[in-house]
Length: 166
Image 1: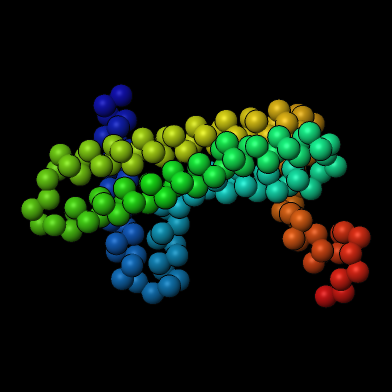
Image 2: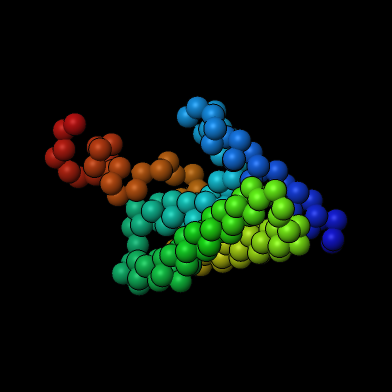
């Protein structure tokens, strides 16, 4: 268990250092370097995309209300937690820039960041489970195969009943 925590802490520290290094690079290289740390953002993005696809289904008013509640209960708090994670990461980077940094404080902040990330991951699992419960297992399977075509995209793609001719 301690070994796993140490490995996770090392990976987080390594990724943090990579981001600092990436900030001094050009835009193309920077995008590649930062993408490794964006895993925390993937949780809320996955929930948001799943919700958007689910909203495109032929749902009852009750199902639509349940999906709206999922945004309030899971999605918005996840985004707030992601902001907390980013702040924690910034604190770690600030501490590491100090030549006389306190290793115990850095390790403590890394643990805090890891705990936040675990909370976000658990929230995403709960949110996806709630979406599946709200729309039913068959619809949930269906949205996993749907292309990303939320309501704003339907008009541009010509799949809705609109008269848009772009």
